[in-house]
Length: 76
Image (spheres, rainbow, N blue to C red):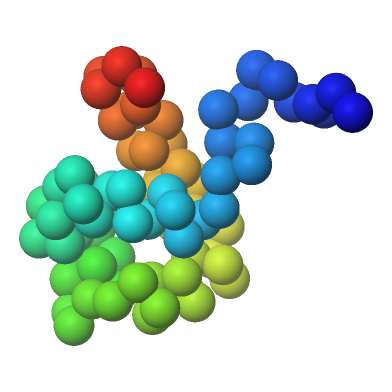
């Protein structure tokens, strides 16, 4: 079976994996500075952030955009 989105770097990557990669690279404090949302700045956790991001399209877009930026500059 062929991939339907071979040029989409987000294809097949879960939101949880994206968030974990960003937290690992930036840490919560820097992630909260990069994307100023409460779930990153006040008692942050993967679970609470995923809950917020899944129901807030603009925030999810910013997280995905930062992830793509990281991939481009990290060379993955």
